[in-house]
Image 1 (cartoon, one colour):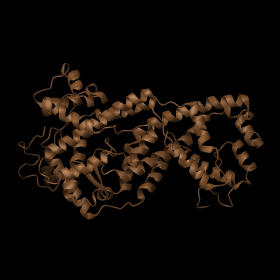
Image 2 (cartoon, helix red, strand yellow):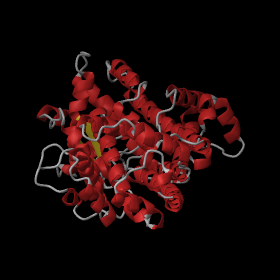
Image 3 (tube, rainbow, N blue to C red):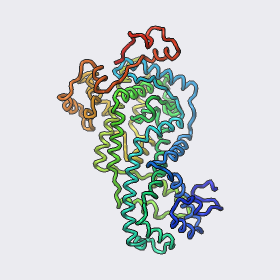
Length: 494
């Protein structure tokens, strides 16, 4: 078989390229035009999409997504060095110990640090991001199938001659098009849609693997919450040349990751709330028929089927298209961005509080991270293109300003009012105007004097665990020393 996916092998017939997966009318068409190597090559490319989607019961071919993501992530990837692994583990232990003095309770499991290669993170992220990708993929495919069924039903009545530029088609193709209106397009298009979404999802995750430093760098969990991820190769590339202490860099990153993890643990409904907003966004997906016609013309007119480079360019244009949110979706998007912005700012705030002046170079490390957050990476751009979602607000500093203003008005305890209930979350306008949020929430919700009451009540049961030092001692089998987990006098971080 040829190494070029656009050009079949000399001994392959167009029918073989599809493995019998396409309707017989389409196979007959390719037999009639089998003398055209370019059109047969186009068939080979289409066959890859159908072959990847066949047998898929969901809206995304995750096997294809995994292959694409791993291939993209592999470029320049490497495993962690022993020094990176040791430094990462020590940084997380220190971060957890410091955060035990914060209002955020520790999850019941000690957590596991994975100083990972990009490809290791990909395997975890494909599972964690599935609840975000699938609702949008399903809604998009449903809308496209409905549109195609409607338009091809009209085409079946009018005949292929009604389409400009379709005169003189081979008889097999003409008959195939004429009969499309009565076919179950869902059965034919959904596998191809699953393959296409798998290809796009793989591109997104692969690019994110090249961009992110840890699992919460995107603002939402991108791996199982029992694990903390540090992508060593990306950390090295980001901070190389800044003349910063690698251990201080590792501690700042570990503090931010651990604070995020504690927040998502302390607020049981938070992750599900984010996923529900994504589902609501997906439910508003619409396909504009006129826009679809323009897109089709833009992609295919002027394409030379005998020129593989021309076909590749058409595919690249297709990959560059994005789903434009409707007005209703934009309102949901603003709420989602506000939640992600608030959680990120709060996690950074708690990390900075416990770090204090313990890290002389913390300000410089945070400045590098601030500059990263001010721009959208390739992975974030692709995520917005795939889902129509942009998780990053136009001004992410609004979250930091909101946290600072609320704490100044109510003290550290008052800040927890924002996550006492989903209705308490500030929207985009209130992030920019903390006084409006304070006025809205002040009449209905009193801030308790004892923060543990809030953490154990409205936040849900959030168990408190021993410090990182005590967990490490217990792991080594020394439960008799002072401050062990059996010592009732141990510190209670809540």
